[in-house]
Image (cartoon, rainbow, N blue to C red; front, side, top):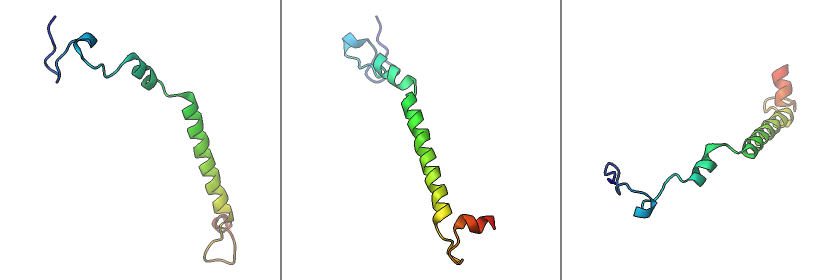
Length: 75
């Protein structure tokens, strides 16, 4: 069996001391995006958007008599 000399460290298999960079476990973990991660990301983004909407509704516009930014924009 010939060794692959095109890469640093040569070739060979695990018996020859080669470290397998992409093992089956790593491929399984990186192959699919976890569903819970997607769901929580969407939930966090929705909460941030809702918090911004509440802030725009409640924060007074600086150049007015206490009206909110939203009220000022809708006028």
